[in-house]
Length: 294
Image (tube, rainbow, N blue to C red; front, side, top):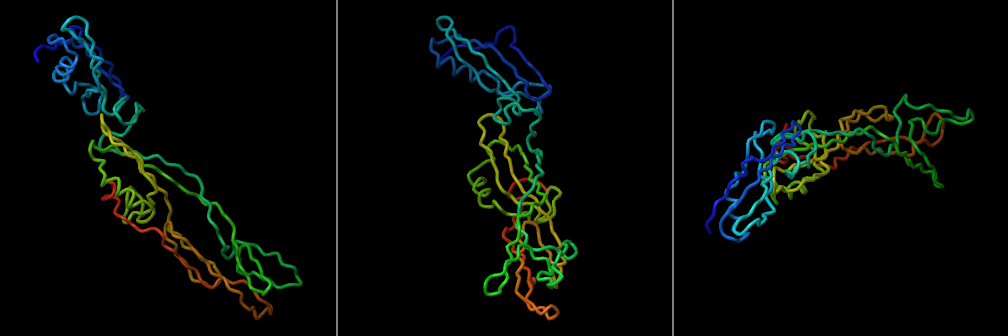
């Protein structure tokens, strides 16, 4: 194969922007073998992989594509090469959205809403009793949804209650090649794990990793999204004679009731006798898992 490649004397066109959408196009020519494959091969070798840009975070635009390679005369071909900001439109990242994170940086999006959980108790002083004067209070400890069966046993059904909840996502741009099979399998393996140490301003166990999305990139650096739910430690008091209860983030509180004889009223009443805090979610080192933080 023989031939030569040169750029149009006009030098192409460049559009420079501050929102990571800079582009540059260059018209190139090939003269030599009368074969489109030979022309394409020569042009690909001749083109620079990057060109300077004032507004790109890396200072350069990367070659995005060239073509179509068109025959305009025997042995003469032309093609247009397009360069783009590796963090902007067409880069394989955020598709031209404003201000995606730069390589090695991350940004956080959050959503504050509510979550529904079942509660079977009211704390002392947080409920009012309205009892027929002819009867003694059958539920002095504030159990919610009390039912009495035919054998006199009492059960507590509880009620669904809304609690404040916060979800947030971390968008992280990583180098090409960082998303490997081992990396993605680890993300799946450690879903529904809490942070074992402080991370991004949250105390240990306050975050629960609930999902991730992303894709490997052919052009530009890929961006990965990590999703979390938040919770906090709560100290609960006022459940009958049960001592103060410490419920950790994302743990579940279960209160056990029994039917007890009240010597004063001479009747059976519902009474909380024990509370159990169940730890469903293990912990993992978030820095080692995700590759950034704390």
